[in-house]
Image (tube, rainbow, N blue to C red; front, side):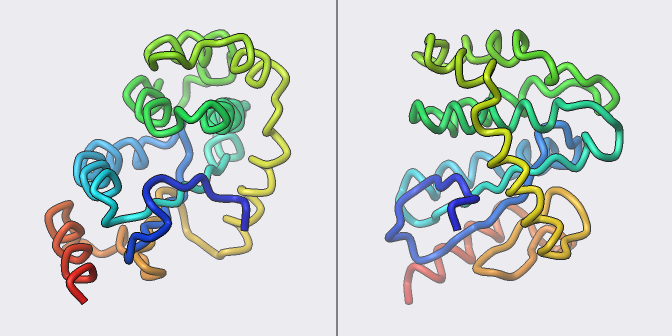
Length: 181
């Protein structure tokens, strides 16, 4: 649909669809717990992850940090650096009430933590809000999807984040079983 940032190989038999907001503390918790297994499986070609970026916290708390961070992440995708920058944004996430990601200088500073990302093209993309309309469309798709909050994590279309028995190990097992078929 053009509203997802893909990570991993298209040929992977399993797809993980993740709706996230870079200001969302629950999203950071999900990323902290699941990131190692998601990276392992996408790097091995066993899982394709599709990231949909939303601006829920901007709406709930005010501000523009969710939008600006999502735009910057899309700018990183343009440079082929989305996974690394995505991780840096969550690793450096400010408190939910602190709209630090509204400041483009903060987003550009964090790009310095990703080899080769802090370029004139990236800076211009961030400062111009090049992907702001794309981010708005992604958020509209989230609203139309009827999801209850972020993160929303779907494994082959089934919401697994709300499953209290789900663990990174269980997700890995599900992907590996799918790949055996």
